Image (cartoon, rainbow, N blue to C red):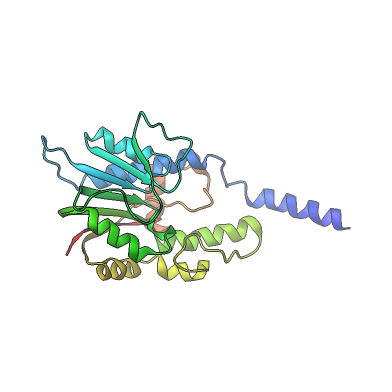
Length: 242
């Protein structure tokens, strides 16, 4: 009887997870680049000025490569080095997760994408980012939204047939708490606490979850439409120093 039950559950899982695609890395890169394109529509860069940009928590380097296409002087850091990073393509530095290896007031822009929620000592890192940002510099942070957390939890339940309380990030120790800690309210309060001014907060206007629903089978255009009904997956914050 036990083998029959296990077989039944496996078949049931196959039926309930047919929409969970296996192209997560490919589509995630597409989402991230689309977000970058939208961000740069709202940034005016002087034509002949060389801007120093930090890609903080650069992951596989795909966004750093995009930044390079904008003729920016890009530095990239992370606490690990992805196998997809080519040192000849991007300027990458491995760092200890605490002290950033740059001098005070070094960067014009600091960029991060889905990184800050994974940092346990967020105040210490915020102070480091503030230290290396020029007085007239800007921080741009893309962070998962409450909508992303909610729909990721729902699709995880359907996928595995149980509620998974494990958090996505390091800020709180359970996924329910992240419904608050991924909100615009929390991050606005957090940034202000660390002496950043909130210049703008906007949505990425894309719907996706941590379970990669249908992957590339749903186009970017259609994901933008879906986000109007089910919410956007990320909030984007543009900050300056106080």
